[in-house]
Length: 513
Image (cartoon, rainbow, N blue to C red; front, top):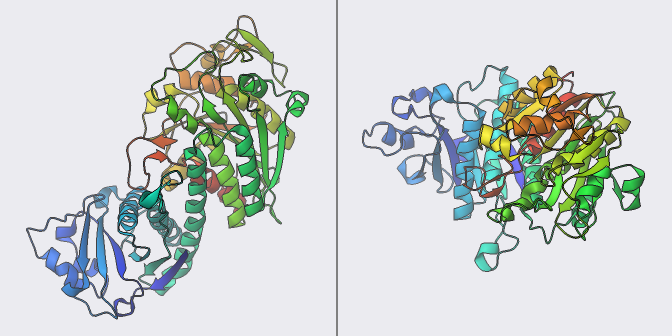
């Protein structure tokens, strides 16, 4: 796929399809906002009180060049609604372009040009805004066209990919910032697809061992270091949580360690990302209900996001030293499975009473968070499909965010607004930690139903006290049952772009945490 920035010269259009974002004040549009050369086409709509197209968010209309402008060849103009200008922000652009990407996939339109919206979108400096808007445009297009067809046959198996995308600039001075934006989005879209592909793969083809193989392949492709702790080495490293969760499965567990070391890292202490990778979660002895259990193939989405984010930082050449810790297990019931009531001792020396084997994610994350201490990290961020309670609290429009450092949490919130992978802060006060005090052991792995997302984070905090730490509960965001403009049904790859943005901003010293 080739992505480029060109000056907008309608008489020299190089693609036969042009996409243009339009606000829903379309009927009152100042004609000076219309890109030069497109006046005649759009005036027909502007002058028509009966036009069906109003510019509402994700509304779409296709026009043809016979309605106006002289060009080297016929072309179609796809108008995409971006909604109310008072609400216009990067996610509206990403969604609108995702709608266009869906259309391109359906119509097999693999070569397109796109004109970014005129006017200011944010209060950021112009160069930064152009970077973000250009990124959002390309991310929306590519991710909107994404499909996971590996297991289909015949025509449904076809794998659509863009061959050529040209983003048109209205001013030559805009081109450098726009070029940086589309180059960034090329990487962020690619690695989101990596995360989606991993998460969409059924569990019979993505066991913990197979995830190790795929992580090795990704490490080779993107230039990452990889180490795998498995078998007796798990015992030697006192990873009792991973061992306990994996005991019921014939597929042995592992800890995957990825590391990106650039030639010139600007962060003296590494950034560590931790991702939960339960390749299938039956609940173990505390068996889940059968309804929707098939979705538990996605319970490794946090691990997929971490793998993808490390790959993205490497492809960007970001000046940040980053480590990814991905505990990979399969949680099944059997004669060897961990029982409710069992007690294990963690690497930190704290004993854990396992009251519910379906609260397994926090056990494997505890091992990874404890292991992170050896890197003397600057920050640690874990992402996990951790609790149904977070879905009950926040629904499927935002992830939950908790941690022990407000500056880090605020930085993640800000970046989540820019990437569209939105998070919302929840409290993590001492009373929640008190609820995790055990009767038989130091701590227990579940408390009551109330505040379940927070008490799960409180459990993790027991293993993350020595560094700046944030926890993102992505249980409501890792997959979607309802297709959205740039999120087809299935895995979303949520948090891969957010983690990559966080690491890159730290490397670029835009964030000092």
